[in-house]
Length: 261
Ligand SMILES: C[S@@+](CC[C@H](N)C(=O)[O-])C[C@H]1O[C@@H](n2cnc3c(N)ncnc32)[C@H](O)[C@@H]1O
Image (cartoon, rainbow, N blue to C red; front, side, top):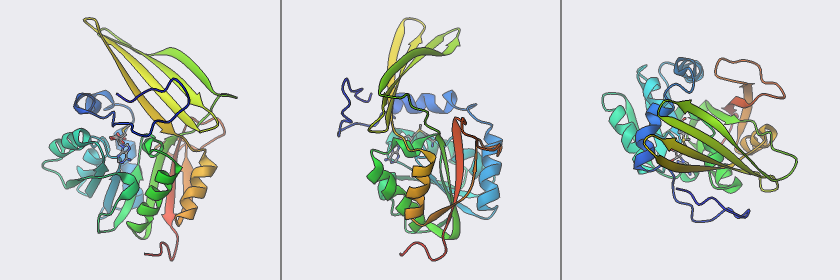
């Protein structure tokens, strides 16, 4: 489990929280998070039926597996061996391959029609330098005119740093969950700690750290990497984004003449 800081330090040696135990649960737990059909249609519309797809921070292939089921090739990159193992097992008979790597340092040796990073995973990179490096890597791995789709939450932080919660986030016959959020406003870091109580008497903690960006900051970072915003939505169904939207799905396009390879 990630070290959850009692102060505002970020902790340089944070191990991956995506271990065997979590990888096993992940596919089941988030299977119904989105309408996966909508996500797949959204991506296919931008990457094409003949396209090749790069899933960054792919996890267990929550998106890659249904996308590859539509006969397009998907390469998943993740730095958690346990998550990739589950993805490889699920994708055995599908056109998928996996690359164990840090998404801030990708060097796959081929280009893709469309790259994407879903479920706030861009914010899970360690810091802004790692995020910038990931976007530069994406630009290097896109075909001319290729697209990059990013799904993140839209931060609505409190006025100053605060520990908020807990609030109940799940209730079922055999499981109760609470979430507590710690906002470090100056550093733009959000820690989310989840307490999971399962019958009979099992209690677990899961924490996740987000180096969050406001939409304009992400757009500026993308533009510096040669990725120009093409469109943005509040969700995969392409509902319009508004000031109080909680989520954002944004499409960038590789600018003409970018990147300098
Ligand atoms: C919340 S999961 C989301 C997985 C997937 N994107 C989805 O939508 O289900 C975040 C994933 O990002 C991976 N991850 C975090 N930081 C990474 C990094 N620097 N390089 C590669 N993978 C990373 C984790 O191992 C984990 O599998």
